[in-house]
Amino acid sequence: MQLDTIGDELTALFVIISDTDSTFNFLVAMMYSQMFNLLCTKADNNPDGSGKLKHHVRCLLDEFANIGEIPNFDKLIATIRSREISVNIILQTKSQLKSKYKDDAETIEGNCDTMLFLGGKEKTTLKDLSESLGKETIDMYNTNITKGQSESSGVNYQKLGRELKTQDELQVMDNTQCILQIRGLRPFLSKKYAIEKHKRYSQLFDSSKDNYFDVAKYVAERRKRTAKISKKTIVDEYDFVM
Image (cartoon, rainbow, N blue to C red; front, top):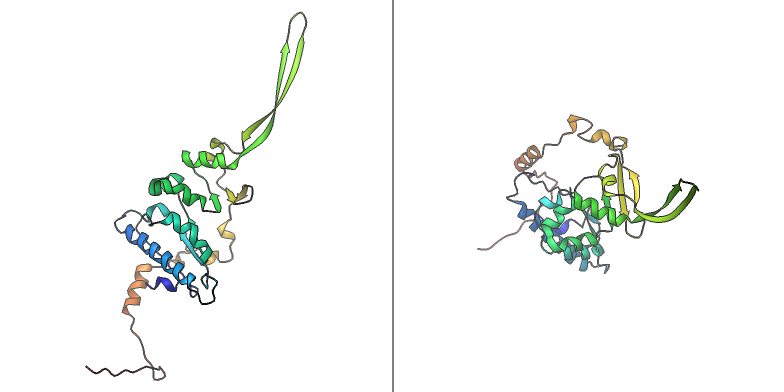
């Protein structure tokens, strides 16, 4: 598959697996493990001495919990960044990561500088997010009025801490909003980007059914292709003595 050449030039590699059958998921996990190791070795041996790849390699790992457990991923995610390799882990819930990587889940999460919450209602995710957002200060006033022969009243003023976003508030968060946390910055609430506004939206399948890309058909046609050599093609000839 020439995985070690991905960082040499601009390349797009699509890894498509079944979302219902996990029989061959281990092969994908092995492929990622092999790719990370090969690219790290190549970056370390870069002739310019930078220790980095020529082109940044970004892995968009959608449905990360379903691709199988990548060996030593907790160590890889902490070291590949210096080689110009980054990973976007996409999960439905944080419990999926804990279920797959057990005690290493916190290490993996800790090595992610950015966390984007698009919405959800899984308790573990909501609880951890609510705690990580911190608290805000609120003012509380208590008014007491006593009626009798001599009426009296009093006002009690207090400052209390409250979660910036409680679990129930996160659960019913507007679907057009998201929460972004970047290391070193305060988390902030933002609007999700409307993909329909992108200048190339017309080229997507969502815009037109004519943009559908048939992977099976493409692969079948590629297998039928044969090399065509013209008169101008330079061919190296070798003589072998048996």
